Length: 275
Ligand SMILES: C[S@@+](CC[C@H](N)C(=O)[O-])C[C@H]1O[C@@H](n2cnc3c(N)ncnc32)[C@H](O)[C@@H]1O
Image (tube, rainbow, N blue to C red; front, top):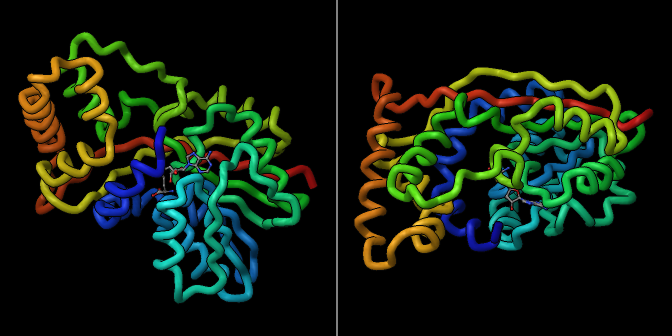
């Protein structure tokens, strides 16, 4: 995935994305139980909502390394965190970056770990950022059958582009860590102990109506690429309209009083480095 290219629309839609993820970010922070003065590493920090909240929890005597592969996210966060000197934005690939000396008390990640080409190498490397006994808490999505956030656009794409092959559920992507047994084994094989997983049903609380959510998902998702790969070039706009209408219908089904509440299932994984 070209995260530098994806970062721009993501940053443009930062407010509704962060609003959508907010209950899950709070669940993650609750499980991480960060303490004043702790050193934290946020993997795949994106535009940085989790890093900023973590920084507020550890205070200026602690620190947060906000780590991401995309330079565009890192320069955005450098500006966004300019009033918090204890947030240190760092660009790098978590699979290979030299974390020695980071000596962190905690690693956290909000949907930032499912995109590694080599997850075992990545987690073994991330483990080196922790001090002995340090903890890791990250959250991923459960399968698409529990997450209309993804199945609504997935169904819309499949309807408009029947030629498109079904995505491989274990390929790097948002849904790659839905298989708890696979991920807990992976963590144990990467040097972690006390590995556990907790599935939680929750709701996403994005800002706006179904049409706004659709516009946001179309901007940050892989739709245009899929249309140009599997659709007729002259039919691009018509296909986009079909996809858009189907997504508006799909998200509209979750209209609550004055907002959209999309049911979601996530998995909180926790583990620690051998003491
Ligand atoms: C779905 S986004 C989540 C962003 C942010 N944590 C949030 O919830 O808003 C995934 C993030 O992981 C980052 N990422 C993907 N592969 C990475 C890698 N190998 N090393 C570090 N960051 C990576 C992407 O650039 C992106 O910011």
